[in-house]
Length: 126
Image 1 (cartoon, rainbow, N blue to C red):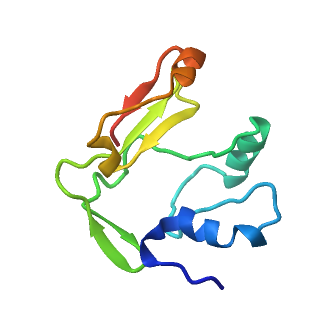
Image 2: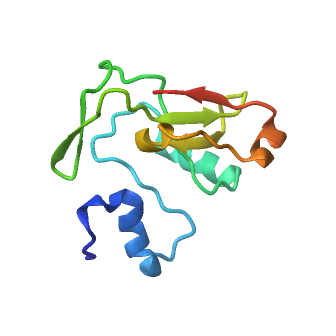
């Protein structure tokens, strides 16, 4: 068991226990995930591409836009005008950029090497 500050998020919690992790790949799934995509297929795609990170995304929530998201027992309501941003390659198969609401309010910076490699980045505001 590791104790971390409440606001570190999933990545911060994983970082706190990183010295205990021995597996090459680690699967993190939200407890409230409902999907018809086999998790094994996602893991196989991750390994096939020797990816650093693999994300399973959907076009839009089936129930419509969410007003609040539950995390760690507390409800967090998105502030008006704050959007997340996702950048995908032209085939929409590879995640090239991701930014949270606070980061999107600033200038958007994408590495030139990414643009040179794929030619275009398609930006989505889910």
